[in-house]
Amino acid sequence: RLAFGQASAEQRLGRNEVAAVMREVSASGRLEIDWQAEGDPPRRMVKLVFLAILCLEVALPWGGTVAVRERDGMWEIAAEARRTKADPGLWAGLEGAGGPVGAAQVQFALLPREARAAGRAISWEIGETGARIVF
Image (cartoon, rainbow, N blue to C red; front, side):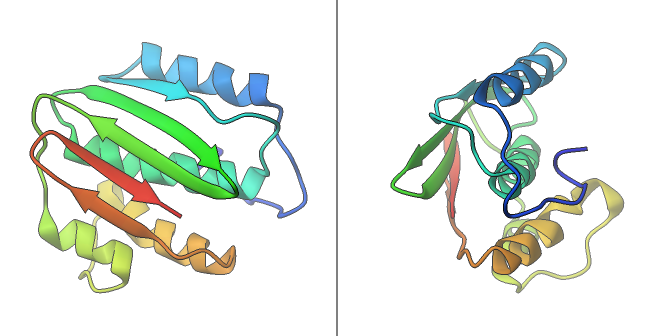
């Protein structure tokens, strides 16, 4: 709901509410998500964070940890794992250079679109044991 629903620029979500959702996601999946951002973030930024986490999840099929940080208005979603599985075609989609994606990878098409709507540029990197997305 948070990743794919409407997101108002003005609406804010309580930090505790977001952290609770992150705990639920962590409990039901391969990823452990550590919400380190302070304050009550705008819903639009939470939407971008969730889309970024969904992108990172694809790169971490064997599990890992994801830390969500916000500093001076910049959001960093960083993942660590024993190993990653990168699909260059999907990740190129974050730059608008990817080809068509299937329903299971729609986050790679939605994240850059939503980031542009929020006036954000995306940068990303992926290595053998981690990946990160910044906007």
